[in-house]
Length: 607
Ligand SMILES: Cc1ncc(C[n+]2csc(CCOP(=O)(O)OP(=O)(O)O)c2C)c(N)n1
Ligand SMILES: [Mg+2]
Image 1 (spheres, rainbow, N blue to C red):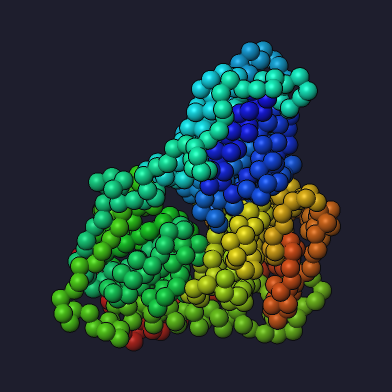
Image 2 (tube, rainbow, N blue to C red; image 1 turned 135 degrees about the vertical axis):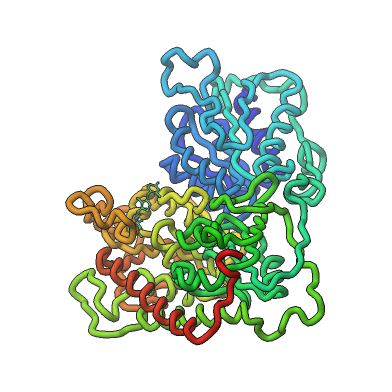
């Protein structure tokens, strides 16, 4: 066996022993030993291999697989600029704590810095975005290599997964390989020592316990016991942690849960549906100042949410306890944290302190939430003559906000919904009724609009490999176009059942809701960025079915299909910006009416 082949074979074997089940590859010559070894293991049924032409799409596919499966995924590519295309996904994986094992093939040292073909400086290419960088030694046919390669694979696995005790995330192994890169007739027959791994298929090195094991937790993120306070609020940002303990605490304490769609916490009796409308209302917030806020995950979705965490000047909550995302990682975007904890327990309140059946504090949030929900739903449900002629949002036609609401309500239990950055995830935040049974994922680590087709495909593939049901992605048109290469799947590639629903407003609709909208003259070119692209033609080029959806009533039929397919909903940026403003106005009017009938609930502003 030649050294490069031996390396690839042993590395793949050891990663399979660690638990590798999915690997993604982009084509190239230098990476051939890794490609052939992964393919061999895939043929043997040990893992699933996915191949993509575009490294950026490949890396985001791996990210989606890792996110939905919650286990490390290998992404491998050749040397040169190919490696740079992985960077965006590596950054998202870093921010979101997703376990990627990045294997970049490289030229051997003698070819570096010489102008040799496809040779760049790949050392520490991803900077601080990886948990661990390793320049592997050049494979050599001598004793000791098996232990080296196997222990290296285990270290990569353990650091990426968090099994080594840290926060999960990407690792980068740069792999110099010298020719021959494929097995050949001149290869030496033997090897100086057996290349076998541990007996019984065990990994070379195992690590003591799961990632968040109590004993591995640093003092700064140890568990915290807090005593009951009447006015508490739980804020859940993006994150995939088990929400059950926090939801239970909120129920015990009688606190509302303000949960972003991708927090997995918008469920249970205390979760609110229309809270973004409440947090956008100064009058409501002023009357509902909490004594304590507990936040989890990565809050970042709306200005109202951040302002609420920060607290009004003079009305800052006495405590803001941040539940750490993992060892050494916590989100405190408003710089308002008073404590960071790895777990929070509620000290049982004095008998009778909680009034069962609805303490005033929780009831006040719920009443306002229900009023806002009713008012918003009434606007979304307005019916009227359907304008069949164009993309304008005539009454009775699907709008982005209504689509988000109806989509989340229509998907069956066990479904997965991938929510794109920009308006899709915000529409869900404003319209999503609390429900269990729907898994919502989003790239909120760095909130890019890149790689989202591929990430959604990866998530759907992993979701369905684990026995999960339907999958759907809700994307804006720019996000969809940004990852058009993600639609290109070769004939041998695993395909998910995934309905990609694209809200096509011919540009970046979010900018029409921001200050930039007031810029006259250059707004369209600089921010709106209309493109006029034909999504149907793009789908056809990728060999995928495409349909245009206009009527809300047709949504269930479109979702019922199978395979990878595109459903386009045409909307108008300007008209929808006006609609969104109207939703806020109607919600605020309804909440004001509720507030007028009850006393203020919060701490006084100087409290
Ligand atoms: C990779 C990347 N580039 C640019 C941005 C900035 N950005 C945020 S939202 C947005 C517009 C997205 O448009 P679209 O996907 O059509 O969604 P819409 O705003 O219309 O809902 C852009 C360009 C980003 N978040 N990520
Ligand atoms: Mg758009």
